[in-house]
Image (cartoon, rainbow, N blue to C red; front, top):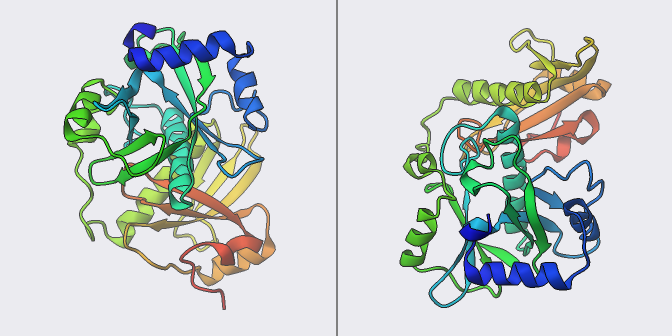
Length: 308
């Protein structure tokens, strides 16, 4: 809500809203280059086309902080399982948050900046994920480029900064920002997994569980067939029972370098659809993410030892 937004941030939003063309939230991201913007309007970040800075992220203006020297920054939680202010997210909410983090990490790894959409909401922002009637109040594109100044998996927190690189908020600024509530208290209390803590079996089980929850959250039926020598671990089908995907799962924990395909998996890869390889990174941790590869694409999967 507007009263929760820092006056300096609210002033920029109001200026953009009053002086710019009147557009709906969908029209705004479409104008910024988001393909199928209407279908993706509920996403938290987007990959746009047409320029070098092609990751767009929504920032809730209520959580944008202004440092003592006037620089803007935003604390991003790296614990997707928790809502703003605390509490557990649903499977779909978790996946949306993971998709957002995946795009932010993509921009960080590529050394790219971020295009930002500033958004205010019609309900208190800490209630936004719990209130099914919550709606966007205002959404405007920020003319300034942002970037990711830090990404700390130990503290479960990233810092996004507006404007030129080389500046980071002071500890006093960070404390004030944390007090605004953008980082869930559970995330601040969570400890980073110790190196080597999870066995390969635990990592694989966590990876399978991640994918079962992911597809189940979208209403698909999943059947785990791991250990049966079929060349895949999960079968995904629609509500009518039609098989959509047969997924071979490879869980990768931090520090792991390579993995192999079994002979059965190699045979299925050569047969093609509906087989897929799913590589799940940070499988035992709260920020697990996955990527699917077709049989013809498996050799491009990072960490995969080349097929015989």
